[in-house]
Length: 622
Image (cartoon, rainbow, N blue to C red; front, side):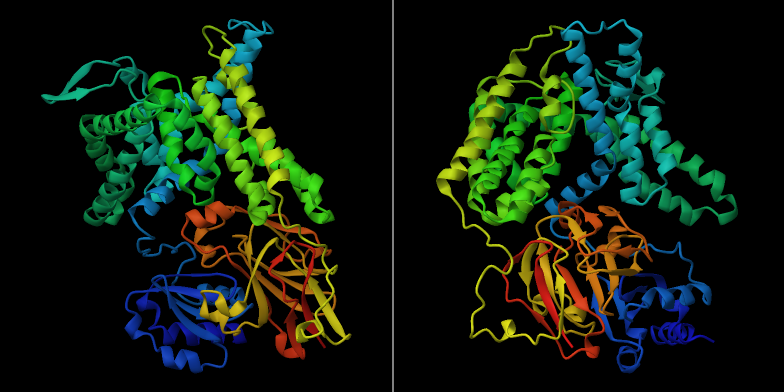
């Protein structure tokens, strides 16, 4: 029997045995059990076990901290027990208040296909522009084929929403898709605006039926999750493969068409009318508020609440006035970043500012906000002011949008109506965007900011003992751009206690993780939330992106390397979505620890407050 198998069997016994385990998963350092009864677990004995670092009870989970070899212990646990690797459901408690839960639901449902929708929206806009400029006709084969792919995602939007909503609500995705297909079936869309009779009960079909609708299918799939679970409990297992889908269809089809669909349509109408009321009161005020605060909404994940409103506006009337007001908010951040490029003397910040200016033009503002304007504070304020002025101008000009897409310069063709080919809205949007960009640029010069000196350019204080490091040392560069957080302040006692090793934590402002030294990737999780590297000098470094982010199952993380890869200092390892992590209710603070700290005299930080990736930030004294 291997050592890892021995550990697995001891741990399983001490948590109350297999019969006390609902599910188990693992992250970078720990086994995460969902136990039926935590009182049956022998916590004191587990803490005394020489192969267990610590036991943590957090978020409804019973976490047994093993260390960097936890994946090997987990494999043995799976191989020598009846616990299946697919048995990963967790009894998650509510995360935050009702508003936070609603934002989490919306972001989880829309995020997976937002790129496809944005691409289709841009294509639809360019097709309109091509027709307006007489490059194409609406009858040409090129237009017909490309319009089919550009418009298809919007016409059959409920089908895509059903799939992602089913994943969020943990119900059968294919049953949900079948339900959505019924909503957009030709026999139903042909009855738009009419009333049917289902066993004497009136079934009201809205004026546009359910094509391009949002709320009805989300509500329907939510109800389906409970209906399906009920039938799985009452129908014998040998009959479930046929009888559960049949029962779900027989219940959900009439319930959806008789009750959920009309209720969802009414809720959508109320949201749309509420926004129209605010916009109708003063388009200028609406534009100033949305343009000035949009990036603030993005920071707190609140922007997801506006996505359904924009879609509802388009599905109900074919027109949306919100998206044009947001364009200045995006481009003004680029203007502020460009000013930073000209003003800063920090070479690394200069490069980041220039690249983020370009990304903001294409609608990606996270590198701009978190890497440049927000850390410097005043450029962010300048950009918000520019966004408010530009948004107010666009509101005053009553610019309208006709297709859904990513808010960027590429969305401008979508401001041209397909029927009249009137370009006045496009011109006004360009003027408002230029105003915002220029104000963000000029105001940054006026307000100025505290420039970040080059790493190592400051003279070390003689009284700072941390700067007086022995020459026999190994220096690691920061893998992340962000704000330094002492390890003891991390809200996870395993990291904060130093049980996994000495180090430091960083609150990231840019969602990219880089190699802190030359070495080999020795620990890498498919979820992308944690990476371990052994440097050429033998230092074992663990970098854990966020807290409890293993629960995201890789959503929001993009791996650039694979286990066993040889990397150089500064190589990109992982891309991660800061806003998505926050929206999921997880802290994004990232501990970086030397797991073999005991092999060295000390691990010292550089007494920094903020750090850019590539700057020296940890010294290991030999």
